[in-house]
Length: 138
Image (cartoon, rainbow, N blue to C red; front, top):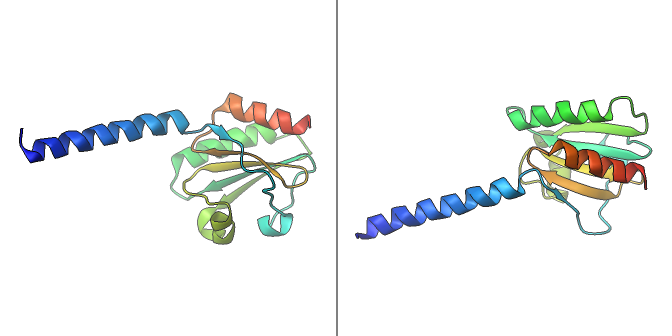
């Protein structure tokens, strides 16, 4: 085998490994480090009294649109929960503070603004519903 063949095989193996990793972690809920919080002033929006779902989006992101629709459906009719969709380009300070690396990124806050959960990628509906329920029942 030539060096070029080894290079091609190496690239294919690395790409496959990254794809498997991304598929397993995409949309999975992560619990951030303790003490992380966001204020209404930082957010630039009113927050829910029991929970706030923040979604960081970009204009041409199809998973962002699907996430927005899903979260809107889940939070509509719950007065104590706010859903805020932020465009990353318009909120760079918050994007940098929270280390947002991709869209959509969904962050769930409790009523005091403490970050309870973070999801990068298209969230799984049952997981985000469970996370929201746990914050509401706190």
